[in-house]
Image (cartoon, rainbow, N blue to C red):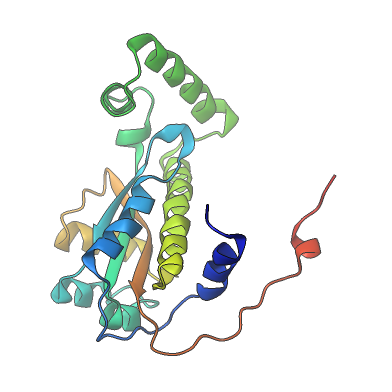
Length: 219
């Protein structure tokens, strides 16, 4: 069992690293562990509405700078740079072909179980959460994508690896770039966030957070 102090130390270690030491590279097995943390992350209904692109090509990293105002220094210095794509309606509509196949081939549900779960999901989407238009459905999928983001960054911190999540980009323009340069089908995916990994170049500022009694209420 992991000691409590080890867990707290990892959270104290993690910060939004603005610049990495470009001379240091994350070992392949360490980064595969980070990706495995993403792959094993939870999601609503277990539908895993994400896809990750690890961008190591320098030319492609350079193209991302055009519309990602929060990323240039990270793109230049990070050991590994990840784009997280969130699924859109072709994958997530209950009456589409993808989900029944996913529940059968990935989740290994019997036909009757899959049909029951799809019924619950249909109600959830249409009335419980009102995911009735394309934007709402994409935003819901993007919310799921933040679960693997947190897990990747926490596992990285536990291994002494720094990270920085990035939302500083123009979404429409960056999506268009992903379609043109990365072969992303924008009918199926949109960019949820970027995240950089590596080893810090500078010591971070002291971590600041509100006190526990300001963020938690017990009833």
